[in-house]
Length: 171
Image 1 (tube, helix red, strand yellow):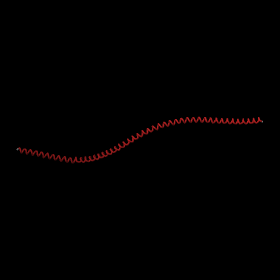
Image 2 (cartoon, rainbow, N blue to C red):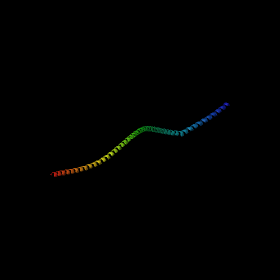
Image 3 (cartoon, rainbow, N blue to C red):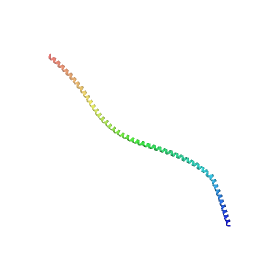
Image 4 (spheres, rainbow, N blue to C red):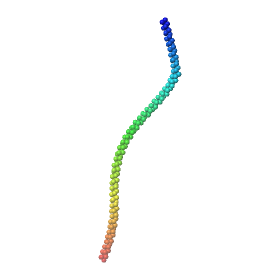
């Protein structure tokens, strides 16, 4: 009897296991059909989204590479402009120095011009006074010449008169 009981228990367990196996297989089929009906379209959608995302990532990487290239070019340009700015600063300082030197020279020239203008004004005034004196002297000379001519005429007249008087007195 014990073997029979064991056999019955074994059969019962076997039946339970077969039922459990059948339930598990049914559940597998159910999950499989559910997977095929719900998950596979989702997988396709996810694959499509994945491709789109990969394309967007590639575009973003391309834009990033392009931006990096532009940044490098801008860095080069900035560096070149900085060198040009430094050169311009040096040139500006040199020009300012030259301008200061020229300004000093201009002030010296202005001072020399003022000195020469003062000398010219003095000489002009002296020439003017000499011209006035010369005119006065010229007038005096003319007056003296006129007086001299009058005296000469008077002397000649006196000499003639004297000769006439001598001629008359001799006779």
